[in-house]
Amino acid sequence: MLKMIAVTAALFTFASATPAFADQPPANPAKPASSTGQKPQGACETIEAACRGAGFVEGDYQKGYGLWKDCIDPIMQGAKQPAKAIKPLPSVQPATVAACKQKNPKFGEQKPPAK
View 1 (cartoon, rainbow, N blue to C red):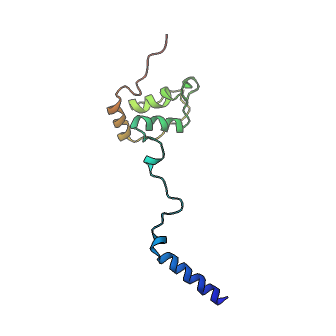
View 2: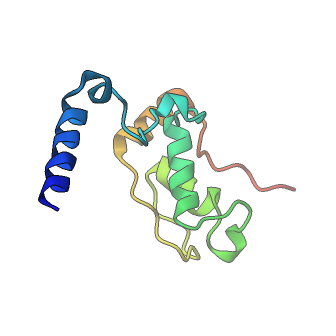
């Protein structure tokens, strides 16, 4: 038994010291963001994703959790939510709002009601 442990230890030492084994990449390397097939989000997309993640749904403003009227518009305008909004606004960094405004000044502007 002692001889088997010594052989195993010697093999382990040899394998970890051999350059062929030492240069092997890890079994499950994390993929860099550029190789995952997903494009990086811009500031406006980050705000929209934060609202969706907080439970706001496009078109559900009459229910109090509309994506645009109850979340995106107030965040972009620095205003309070409508009184009937039932979900709290997600936390969005002011720098993200500023970057979105710079890229798309009309993003989050309340649209006039449809006639």
